[in-house]
Amino acid sequence: MAVQILTHCLQGLTVLPVQMEVDVGRGMPVFSIIGMAGTSVQEAKDRVRGAIVHSGFEFPLTRKVVNLAPAELGKTGSHFDLPMALGFLMASGQIGALPEGVRIMGELGLDGSVRGVSGVLPAVLFARESGAREVVLPCENLAEASLVDGIKLTGVTSLCETVDYLMTGRPVECRALPWELTEKRAILDFGDISGHAPAKRALLVAAAGGHHVLMSGPPGSGKSLLAEAFPGILPPLSRDELLEVLRIYSIAGRTLEHFTLSRPFRRIHSRTTPFALLGGGTALAPGEISLAHRGVLFMDELPEFDRATLEALRQPLESAEITLKHGKKSSSFPCQFQLIAAQNPCPCGHLGDHEKTCRCKAADVTRYQNKISGPILDRIDLHIGVPRLPYEDFRLSSLETTPILQEKVLEARERQSARLAIHGLLTNQEMTPALLKKERLDLKTEDLLKNAVRYHGLSGRAIHRILKVARTLADLEAKSMIEASHLMEALQYRVKT
Picture 1 (tube, rainbow, N blue to C red):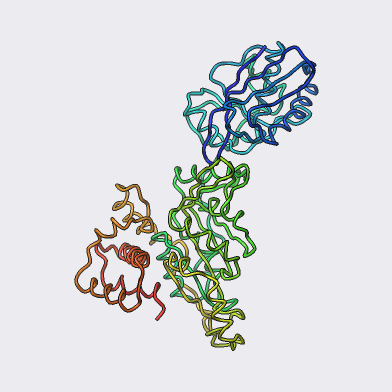
Picture 2: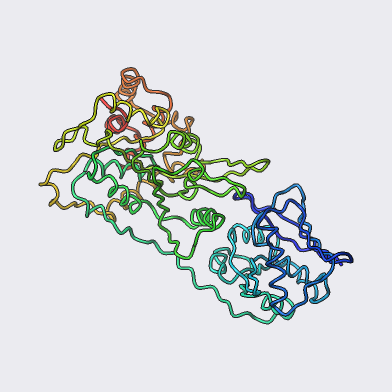
């Protein structure tokens, strides 16, 4: 007897329907899984057999075949275990048919326990959109799934409990803990960081408009402290943005219990490979740039990164999306992140330092600074210096705390939203060349831009990014037009004179 169960598979952020056909018939006692099943799916044979036996059911000692259709679609993941076991129990006549409109997912332990799986959030969203009325899933994934409204969710802990619930409707004990969406305050406050008023100003501009930043300064000058404090002045995630972020983390198999409305902050090491940065592999798993979606990607010691890793950032910085490919499979992940990068000015770190003498040769300095290509530097909006603080400044307190700066950011973002929402955009960083052309400049500002382009040989991309920063500066001052003072400050962040 053959039975059919509707399930799913993941390809990146895309959830695709999979028809599972389970057949128990006459023949040698072999167990086959067909339909482009990956290693994790093939390993389900032993998990399903052990779970069925240890749960008190009989494992059929006949020919057993599981077909996952469509056959040309590669399938990975352990979420097939639970529906596969139920299919065997139905096909062998040990339980009745499953209720209509119920989707089932979960990994099985050899003792019959049901364990958590990755990708639950997008799977539940897909089930709701495809007309399912209920999803039966591992109890440990119930809190994550509860973020989805409009569909019944039932958490189970074992194969026996699953069978009992589906056959009798008897309530199960698993209950999702309430998910409190609260904003987690940054541990590091800008008010606790002495000095660096120009750098703080630049980071305020970056937060207000969603711009990328490169900080340069000697070791110990405070670059990392400023970067770590930066997420605290960003606006909290909206519910839609939170779901975007959680879908990515769910597919990556990351723990979601401790998520808040604070934006992701991903700090990566200089030994990070292009694969870890971008993502990929047989499962098309998201990389660091996608885990930083709607948040911050902090790259310390930028010139120390491998050239291939840095060059891999070109497309994501421009399009805010990354397309991963493996064989015939491909999937796109969003990566709308803010890059906050830091570097020393030279190999020893003390070029331009007023307290320590640089020991580097001119050729070594040039070689070090050329490690970051022009196209990458061209995509970074704000280039700022973070010099070593004199001793006297260490004891000075800052009046601009994180809450005060965040309030300014929120006001600027509201102005951007009022202007850009009709175009489906959130920040000035996302403005298209067509929108930038509509920005009116008075004669004085227009002449200033023309002279800057001629004198510095600015590329078209550089001009667009300067205008975006200038537009943010205007928003911070609640001005409807970009003025000469805004353009002048934007040029100072961009151009090294």
